[in-house]
Length: 67
Image (tube, rainbow, N blue to C red; front, side, top):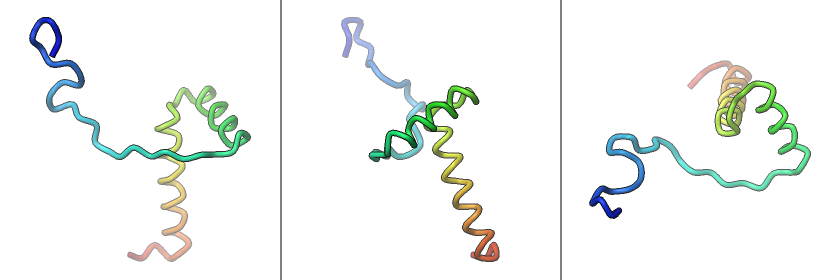
C-alpha cells in the first residue's frame, strides 16, 4: 500500500489477459523485428502475435482447413 492507503498497480478489472513468453532469438531476426516495428508502428508483442497467427492460419490452410 502507498502512503495514501491506496493499492498500487493495475486497476481492478484491468488485468492482462494472456501469457508471458520468453525466448532467445538470433540477432539478425531481432534486428528485423525491430525494423518491422519501427516501419509499422507496432509493438513487438503485436508483431509477434500477428506472425504467430499468420503461421497458424497458413498451417490450417495447408492441411485443408479441417479441424
